[in-house]
Image (cartoon, rainbow, N blue to C red):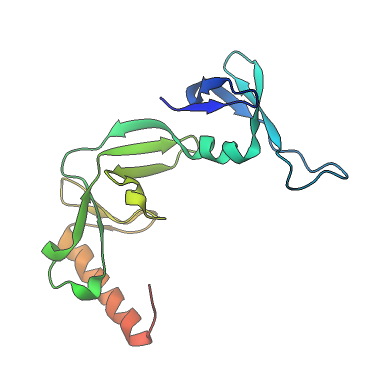
Amino acid sequence: MKFFQDRYGDQYPVSRIHRIVALQRLRDGESPHAVRYQTVYLDDERKVEVASADISEITSAPAYVIPAAPGTYMLGGVFSDYETPDDVWKSPVLAWGIGSDGDIKPWTVDGENDFLSHPGPILHPCGKVDEPHSTSYRNIGDWFSEEIKRAQERDAKGEEL
């Protein structure tokens, strides 16, 4: 269970948050470097104040975590170095984190999105490959062929990833 701390050091489970009030504008003469607080209403309508810097951590943490099916992998690597789909780097997805914003992210032993800034393509146990917010492929071979084609196009144009 994840906890957050209010301005007085009291800790509460993130699951008790009912709503977070938007950050107010700076008042005249207020330093932009001063610690600013936002009001957080708990499930019992009690309100607490939390440092604005902590709000993004609270809201980015998964609200729910569900286990991934065995055989689910995040794929990645430098495709110009690979010759076959068997050469592709695969990291087992252990769970899916569902954020308070509804975004679903894969979690591996290295953390959210395998500690990458964006999630990689997902290989499902049925063999289907999904690129996040993009295309689905029937199997890893179809996906791999498309990735090789994209890598060759980037190489021909002299583009970096």
